[in-house]
Image: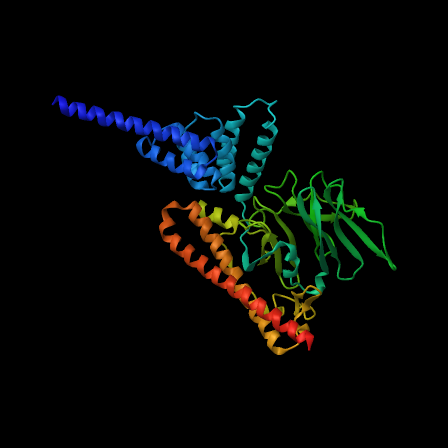
Length: 463
């Protein structure tokens, strides 16, 4: 009996020693910012002591640093109120996952733990205000129908706005503001008699207007002190009514970076109404901009970098609602995903015949392309290809690129579902792996075909 007790004592001693050793190792890895290894170590500790506040907090911090948002939220919540920073992280994570009311509550709790003189007090207050605004917006998500979406390089995003000349024209010039890249956008009316354009003033973007006077343009003037603020205002577009202006701003009434706003001209006072944030799903906690509405054909476009890698954006085309139509559902998860455009209604009755088939382009722009043949030759029209063979190769490239972009969107959506829905991860994992293989193969095909096309066309140019 005594020997059995001694054996149990020895085993308990070794268990405590091993646990202590693992805890020390986990702490060392955590302090060295080796979050992947630290998370693995804390996972072992949590299997032994699942309610331990410190282990849950540290495990959550590792998940936070590794962008595993759902597990970070779960374990921050399990860590309780022992660590004040928990609410700061939860405020950010709830905002990121569109749980805005919970974000507000977390930020409120964190504000109670810091002084008003603290340097981050105002930052947290601003974050809380954005969460409050987002919570109002998610209660009124616009019920829209998406026609199409395509992932493109941000540097050439305007090339995918294939609207007719009846709307006027848009052009973009790259600009760098500090470390941030942006564009100066110029919108010119269909009559070529007025311009709305953005430009830098004291290190920020504002919107200006100018009118055609015989052969010259009038001196640029600020479009309005109500529209231009201390923040950045950019990406202007004027509807055919000459009164309604869409633009993007990253000011106090934005929930992310750039948000889309609308305002209307008041001729009786020669100014504009207070701009309104147009809400979700157009706006997100990321950058959303360049709203274009074609009232003639009932088509709209906007760009967003939500869920995209650096340098990529999604262009959504949609059917604009003639009046605000609120998405109705008792399912809060469905509303959340619809607000992010992870789920959306596909337009079924859109008559694509009213606009030429080349992505809603007019006759003059139907053949517009951007293809670098060599260092000194760039094609901007597919009619520039010298033979039918290379023109057909270009068309194959276009088709392959379109299919590739669609698969990239599917992959991003699956990855987002994987990170947010732990219970379906086993089902989603093989689908993600399959898509990743398909995308890799298509990217190889795209590279090979591009190389083949470039070689053939260079040979044609030497003949």
